[in-house]
Each structure stands twice: as structure tokens, then as C-alpha cells.
Amino acid sequence: MKRSLRILLFALVILYGTAPILRAEDMATAPPAASTTVAQTEEAPAAPAVTEPVPDPSGGATGGAADVIGVTAGAPTADDMKNLGPNEPLALKLADVIGHNRVAVNIVWTLVCGFLVMFMQAGFAMAETGFTQAKNAGHTMAMNFMVYALGILGYWACGFAIQMGGVGGVATLGGGTVLNSEFAITLFGKSFGLFGTKGFFLSNTTYDAVVFTIFLFQMVFMDTTATIPTGSMAERWTFKSFVVYALFISAIVYPLYANWVWGTGWLAQLGKNFALGHGHVDFAGSSVVHMTGGVAALAGAMVLGPRRGKFKADGTPNAIPGHHIPMAIVGCFILAFGWFGFNAGSSLAGGDLRIGVVAVNTMLASAAGAFASMLYMWNRYGKPDISMVANGFLAGLVAITAPCAFVNSVAAVGIGAIAGILLCFSVFFVERVMKVDDPVGAISVHGVNGAWGVLSLGLFADGTYGAGWNGVEGAVKGLFYGDASQFTAQLIGTVTNIVFVFVVMYVFFKVLDKIVPLRVSEEMEMAGLDQSEVAVNAYPEFNLNKTHR
Image 1 (cartoon, rainbow, N blue to C red):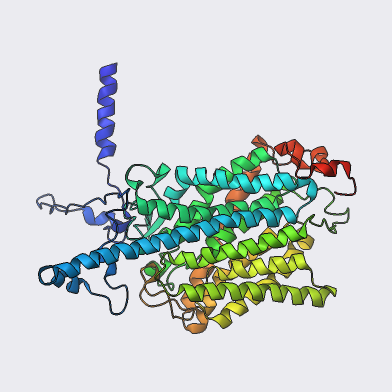
Image 2: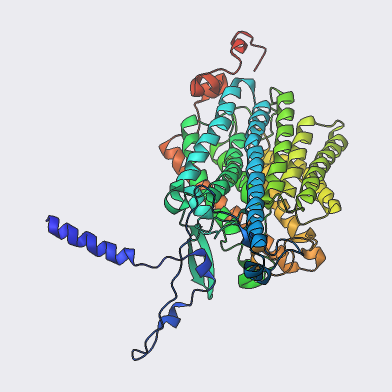
């Protein structure tokens, strides 16, 4: 029996150990299956040996002379560097040091920006808690805290590999080429990347200094997506089902769509494969991060149902004010501060001077969003509503996240202003027409304005940045600058996000509700979720003061 098992194991090793691996760099050049048929009398030429990238855990071998080639208009060419060897050996050594330092600067820039984005979690926690009731403040804070920890673990286990396992490296960071395995299918003679297959548990060949840098930066983006539904589903969500959700979205749902846009997946290749602009372009995450979170928030809020007392018998909504507006406003300012890391950091290069344009566009759009929301509410209801103004501020930030690197300042203000108006319309539509209860306006801020952000890129990109983006020659241009196909690519990516994320998350929440109930009991909801769900009251003295909700 043991001998038979050994023979079976040996056969499996031979069978699967010799199976070909589709690497990121092989996808574009892999021949169709039909081309492998040759005459039996003809001897096929030997395939050239492929050198597998070697990980660099210490980072000591990362960055060198090759990383200064072509980085600026006057930088040395490959031929220049080749001629330096015999003629100027010292210059070649200096170029090696300069290249290493250039990569080091970019890695430090990426990490510091990632730290800023991580701090946005504090902003989300304060904004969501301030906009909800005092009796649920501890529960809301607990979800915002634990979604960070759970998200990290889910993304580390498999989310990162699914998203970035086939990206093929990041040139500005000088490495990451070990991430070279993408699962793809061939349709219409074109390769459609679906998900990466390297980087699970950040182990084996992905134990690499650059890969770990990429992981940190991408992980904090994922965590923003994961935290968005904690706002739309606040004040009635069981903590047990929340834990399952956090692992699921960080390990599976977010990474899949992110791969299609940022991991050399099929949406990114719409330009190369079908001449649709530069493919679906999203500089910092209006669709990948915010829209994914907003659509998931919609699905979750619909399955969970409204809070008790939110709607009257005739369907008209009751206002349930947040308990601490100053806390919410401070949270929004923290988010705006972290957003500079979110947007400017997405250059992944401290030496990319476009970061100044990105930062200013980010600032302008947020101001325009707040101002437009204030004017709308003031004109419509006679007074400016500070909670709507704060959400308009965030809506402007969400909308500019995709186009921030590709538009001028006038377009940035226009995009932000439209986002602020859209926010107001959407909040009332979701509540009064769809009858969906969203305590913090997450669906409107992130979902609606995430969609507007990527579509606005397809309209206003002015062709001054993005040369070679997604492997397409020339800079990124929108409809108003002569490239209607770019808007088409943006539209395809937007529709894909809505369909994919909503269907998957709606089914997920429905199934999960059968296994781990999503909703707390009516008694718990009326009393507050702090003690019953997380064992700590945010405001214990409020138990003695019944004037507080």
C-alpha cells in the first residue's frame, strides 16, 4: 500500500511539477495554442532558458545603474551606460550608487505616504462614530479598529497575491519582478488577466524588500475599501458577521477588481487589446477603492435593512442625528490630511514632480465639494447643513482620486463641485426613493462619487501626463481632449465594478445571514450595541443620564 502511494505521489509530482507557469511578462508574447502544432518530421527549436527573478530580502541588491536610464530627458541612455564601462569605470560606479539612492528615495516616499493612508483609519473611525448615536459609539469604533487588523491578515494570506501576484514589478521601486505569475484566459485572441498567483502569505520568492513595500502601500488602500460598509451598516450589525465580512472583502473581492485595474488585469489591458484609450485608468482609487467600498455598502445596507424607527409607516424617513458632530468634522479633516498620501503617494516616486499637481488638485476638489454642498443645502433648506458640507468635502476627495494626476486645476474644481452637488442629490435619493438607511452617507460619498471620479477622468484628462500608461503610447487624454475611447474604457470599468461587486456582496450577505445572522435583536438595537456586542460602553455615565440617546 505504501509503495503504491509513493508511486502515485511521484506521478503527481512529475505531472504538475512540469506544468508551465504563465508569468506576467509571458502573457503578451505567449503564442496561441494552435501554433504549437508542428510536422512530426520537423524538430522544434529549443525554447530559450528563462531566468527566474531572485528575491532580495535585504534590499542591498536593489537599485543600480540601470535605474538612472531614461528617467529624465537628459538622463543617460542604455548605450551611454554600456560605453561607460571600459572608458569611465568610476562614473559607472557612481551611476550605480545614484540608481540605488533613487530607488531608496522612492521607497521611503511610498512608505511614508502609506503611513499617512494608514492614519486615515482614525479619520474614518471618528467620522462614522460622530455621525451615529452615542449608544453605539463603542461598537462603531470597534468595527473601525478591527477592520484594520482583520483586513491586514486577510490581505496577507491571499488578497495581495490575487491583486498583485502578476504585476511584473514596479519600475520606480527598482524591483518586485518576482511578482510575475498571472492567471489569464484567452478570448478573441487576446489575453485577459484575472488574478495573480504569487505572494500568498508573503513567503517563498516574494520575501523581498520591494514586494513588502508594495504590500504595505496596497494594503492600506484595501483597508479603506473594507471600512466603508461599516458606516452604511452601523448601529444594527452583529460583530460576528462583521468579522467574516472583513476577511472576505480583504482576501477576495477587493483584490479581484484591483487586479483587473492595477495588477495588469483585463480592464487595464483594454487599451492594448481593443484600442480603448489607455485601458481603464484609475490613478489612486476612485473605482478600485471607493466605488468598491460604496457598492459593497449598498449591498450590505439593503440586506441588513434600516434601523428601527428610521422610516414611518408611510415610508417617509425620520432623522436620526449623529451624537457628536465635532468628532465627525475632525475625522473628516484627518481623512483630508491622509488623502495627500493617498493621491500623491500613488506616483510611487518621490522624484515624479507631478506630485505637486496631484496634491493641489486634491486640495482644490475637496474645497469645491464642500462649497458646492453648502450652497446647495443653504439654497434648498435655508441653512447650511454642516454634516452635508463635511460629506461634500469627502465627496470631492473621492471624485478627484482617479483623475488627480491627469487634469488641470480648473477641471479639479469642477469635478469637486459636481461631486458636492451629486452627494446631496444621492443622499436624498438613497434615503427617500430607495428606502435604504445609510447612517453616514457612505453609499453617496464613496459609491456615487467614486463612479463620477473615474468617468470624469475620461472627460477631462488633458494629455499632459501618463505617457505609456498600461503599455499604451502617448499621454492619457479624455473625451474633451480628443480621445472618446478613453471615456468608453472608463465606462466599462465603472459598469464592471457595479455588477461584479454588487452581485458578489449581495449574495455573500444573504448567505452569511443564514449562517451567522447579520442583525442584532430588536432589544439590543434599542438599548445600544456597546455592551451587548463589544462589552464596553463608550460613555458609561450615559446609563444614568436618560436625556442622551
